[in-house]
Image (cartoon, rainbow over all chains, first blue to last red; front, side):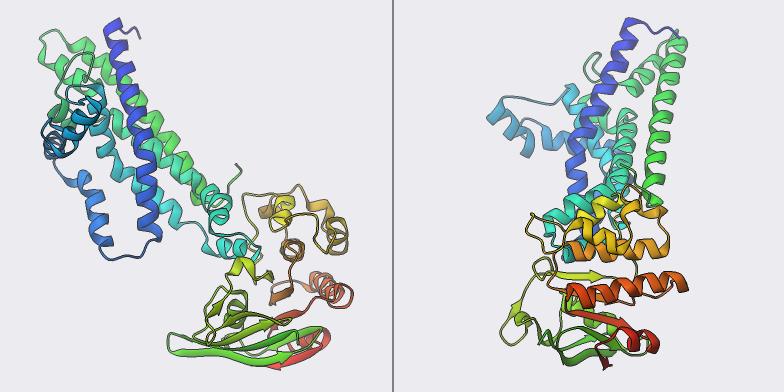
Length: 230
Length: 203
């Protein structure tokens, strides 16, 4: 299948947005997953609900909230503008933020399950062998939950490259900057002779999403069986 | 005294605990299942916090509610062999054995330990490929090699067939008579208690 140079640029942009969104969300998602899996604190239910909000909220609402937060006068946008002189509006970085926020619930869920699946008794065994809390984490908990964490990351990546509603609301549909695969498909659909382009881009989308899902599933199965040959 | 234990803890509706002092050798904690024997071991190892009481091993206070002493598990140097082997599934046998090993000053030599346990040929295997008896002996080796001050054995012979039981019993006798580590062993089998115990504490 031959893509035009413009279409290749769209694919490249989508991959960049997806990878950056996933990488930036990973540590945040892991910290939240850890808190939800292991933490005991008041307001845990509320935090759980907040994390899941982007999953159930209309994406256009998430996009609008991001717009409010990152606008030049907004709470986050103001700080970025004043301290760093940057803005994410109409930029691919903004698209990555939207994708990351939308991917967060899926990533937290996968990671939380894998942390909860770690046998706490192995952790007690490690501590009787002289391992303090940090060593227990690095040598037992993390290696045993890593397949689930990677599965969550891949799932987050897949979700990121498919993000549409929040992205178009937040950073609009700027060719070469925020026009990722789904936005490009949407734009091509508006054109009278865009059918061929829609087909090509849709096939790329299917291939990327399917590949990511398969990888994610294989990783999750590996963590579920408790067999870790890492 | 090797063990001076006086602990109680409320677990749901039940009150579990034990009071005993024991000298050298192997002390058997004997009692029917459900008597809270494992909970007592957990309190000595620091995995379960007693509501009240004290734990002293070989003269050192590990826990004392009145004096607010509670040494963290990782610094109690308890060699704990759990009822299930609890080997780390992502580490080979060798790495499992060396997990608790720090520095060269340990009292027990690696070669000697794997030798009397008969696990030298298993070093490169993954834990999931081991038989029950092999996993049990590796777990004992891992505990011994962490340079413990005392050993806690929770039903070390349960769910093993006869020949395997004999192997593990010999290893325990070796620990009792040659290595001379204070051992506290939980069992509900009178025969085991009789053969291995220097003394028997009934719960």
